Image (tube, rainbow, N blue to C red; front, top):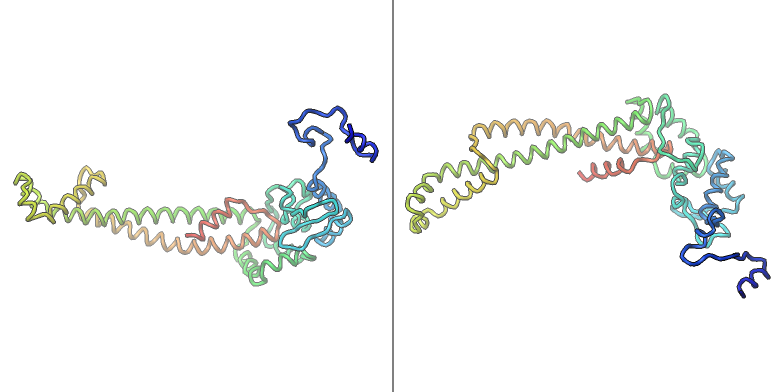
Length: 317
């Protein structure tokens, strides 16, 4: 074929015994599949961390040796002469995010290609945090410092000194327990509010039913006379509305006003007590989540998605 002749002449590869259409070229190559530009970048990152860089600048220097250049921007992005498009590290998959790279630089993991959810289990979380802050150097530390103000970090340090959590897992568990209690109180308060509203409506219909009972009995004895209805229409409609409400509540027997008043008072007292704890916990949970985000960023810990969702829900409430 002409294409094969041209390839041979210019010392290019030629497919011997080409396969039928239906599979991509890389798939057909099997074990000899060509590497993508992302594969090359991941290999370069792995190679850089094998050198155990002590700073972000040193890490970048190793990548420059492989021909990579950092593209200025919001996210860590690399260009290379072989690439047509720039590549963001967050598109490389698990183990190559900016947090993973920062964590490796700060010494929180040994291999960028084996990233898992990290948990700090050292003797004291405060000492871990202070160690990371005091050792911060290079571009990575500067980026971190820009994101978190000194005042914000100082509050997180003071919080740890006051509570003295042994490690990150213990602190994360404390946050989780606070959130669970907060959610329980929220559900309890909503349930109490619903029942309080039902009691108020039920009391109103019981009172109306009692007031209009004799009139409705007279209407029934009149054979549902149109004349009687015209004279007492308002009271009869109120009585019917009360009976309809009782059916909706599925009541076999009407409760007494005294019993409803007693239940209302108990629920109201319980709601007030729970609400006081709810407001207090709401503030504590928000504060602890903010501190938790600070610690995770400093230590290079990837937060769980469901934890971020819990934070979003607590802010909406």
